Length: 158
Image (tube, rainbow, N blue to C red; front, side, top):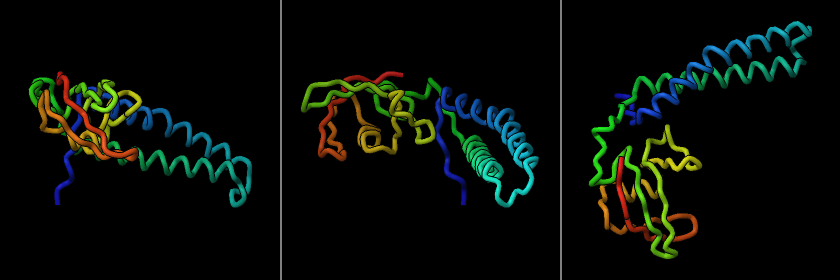
């Protein structure tokens, strides 16, 4: 069984590499120091500082493993691969909500890069799934928690 390919833009790749480097070079040392300090308090069987530090250490190590796996399975989406005629990963899309006329702008990324607050949505999200492969002028219906929303694709760019 092959590992699932993870599509990343250049900025997404840099973000993951930066987080991985920070966890390995800074957070590991910080937590090791916290554990050492907690052990110096004596009996670790009832030492909440020790337990907290060990839990944080486990989280950090788990995150490092996750990020390393993402990097091993990464497929970089190059700018020249991004087609401005059809929505795909890496596309920046302008949609118009046909109910209220409001326009939305966002970039389609992988779930690993998804950050709605930064206008980056996953191609696996309800909106992402419905607009992948569509072109300017297409109208799509998206089922969202509030109901069915109709969008018109107004623009596609890199």
